[in-house]
Amino acid sequence: MQKDRGIFLKGVLGGAVLAALLGLLLALFVAYTGAYNIAASQDHSPFVRWLFSTTMQNSVAARADEVDAPTEFSETQIAAGAEHYKAMCQHCHAGPGVERAEWAQGLLPQPPHLVEEAAHWQPNEVFWLVKHGVRMSAMPAFGETHKDAELWDIAAFVKQLPGMTASEYAALGQQTGTHKH
Image (tube, rainbow, N blue to C red; front, side):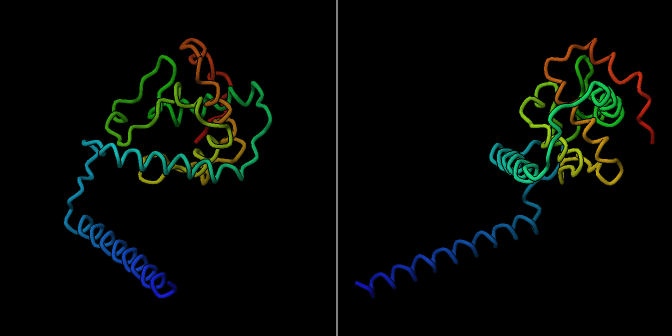
């Protein structure tokens, strides 16, 4: 009985090693032959889109858990965040009554329209995304060029986007004069 178990385990281990080698060979084949079209003018397959999206969401959630978000945001922070958002984020993510910039239509993956998507993210996750960016998505990391307080202002504003009207959006961010580059 013990001998049969050992043979079985060796077979399972051998099969796993063989499967890993075949997976590696397939990945190398795709990489070196150019078999996968990386053009931004053609969408990913549903599986690849799901894989990237699920990986990104779980990666952000795992890392943002280490970030302590403020318990509440002031109107001043939200207004300052609106100014930063309009200068740095609106081009890709749009806003209430404002569409993405024309050039952002060609990005793939398409940046999320935050009026709808912001409801699905916690403030610490929005902060983490803005600070660290997302690889191979055109989402830059603003942590190198902006203070954490400014990034929290952006997170505070982004969390206000769901349900915001176009006139409310237009009125915010005009009065602070805090965004300077």
